[in-house]
Length: 164
Image (cartoon, rainbow, N blue to C red; front, side, top):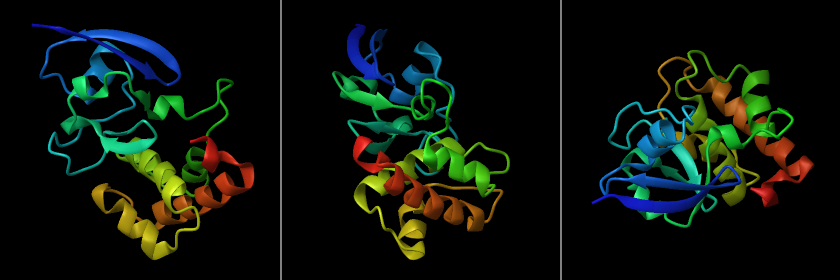
């Protein structure tokens, strides 16, 4: 028995028909074509699938799509401005080379933006603790932490923290 769900994804009202056991990550990637949300483990271990649901970061590979009925969802594709200007956290990752292969990057960025909501003046230790649920196999985290620190600062100066 299929379900018809209504949700707002990256600011657009979306209606999708899915099976009751459909995962949010699959709906975003397959049904809506938002492939920036990566699936690396299917067990909530790697964090590559992190998106925002009603402003809070969640791992979409272990969330049923039905749980997102009526929710506001933001994916990595929804962070940049409509004109293509990168979100301050995305720009900071680019500036500090906080990525190599890029597979973990969407989840890292989405988690870091949520950190800005919860702890806009996070210390390096707090950043590392917040990102524990996101695995990167390439960078060793040093540049990721620098990028998040810069992104937090840029979001504060640009007034983006409250907007997220």
